[in-house]
Image 1 (tube, one colour):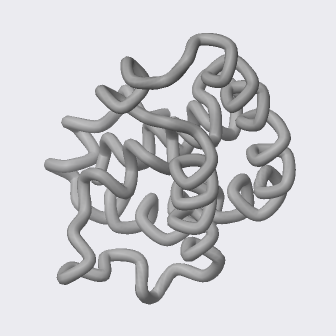
Image 2 (tube, one colour):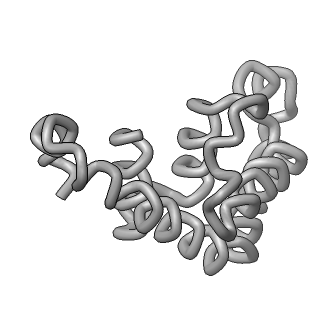
Length: 117
């Protein structure tokens, strides 16, 4: 959870892009463990990741694409991120607002996570 809070803060400050932040947070949680079911607005993070991955080849699939076609697809990411930016930023803040009190109320955890600010 501490890592999620750090990533959310980095997304809010612009240190990490919203797609990378959403993908990182979601990759650490399974759909069978709905960690975010009580946090408002977080479903948009999955929508953002799905939208980018549907339009832009990821990982090993990129090697099979024509470089010019791939470059054209890559240009879509900023447009997709812009469509989701406001809602994604609200979701990152909602995650912080939901989990930070838990970290603050657990002295041992707070001591370990002081770097999270």
